[in-house]
Length: 298
Image (tube, rainbow, N blue to C red; front, side):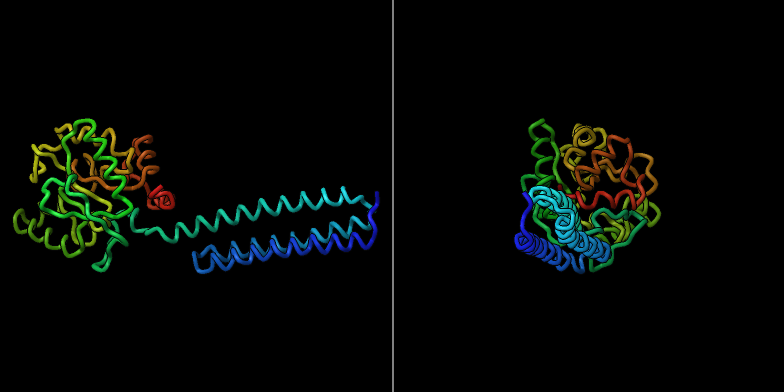
């Protein structure tokens, strides 16, 4: 049955109002992503393009009048176009969510340091939490770690305990000043040449990120001597990646001496990919590493 001209005009008006409301939603999304990242102009251009497509719905209905389509045929054509718009809006919304998430993640947390990049004296993680004393070698000491990393560390050490592995934390977050004092002490004790083989200068230490911990056990204690021969180290090699931790300085690395006790959190996805591909963290380019930033704490 052919619908009347007045009915068509009323129907066109209704569809136009729906499209106008949908367009308003896209404008809201543009406002929401403003100033998030340098990609905002690209997203805004996409939304403007969608607005142009939305206007095509009215054109479809006007064309339906000229082609003398039935109401059912006109509705089907409009529905297909609306579904296409909805899919594109969903894509934009997903992109907006990703940009928001990325903007709130500290890019320094996956940066390559260790004589590569530098952290200034004012840098500190956005949020630090105390590591519970039950996980610490000397319960009289207080160590801090990035708040988002703490649950991963606790899960890993709980699993180690379930496997009857003797392992505990002996160092974690160190500020720029803390690292300066530590490096100075090592230099006095061992000389600059030797100290540079196992201790980073202030600003180059992964510990300043708040995502790195040193482990020990009751047999090794604070000396670290012989840790590579312990069950704790063997367990970490086989299990730490499951919780997002990787060994920063394996044997034959180009930065410092072999440090089997020094483990850095890089996120489960990156840690698992490194293990699968038999790579070390510093083997990857910074561009490759940055791709994992958005999933760091997932």
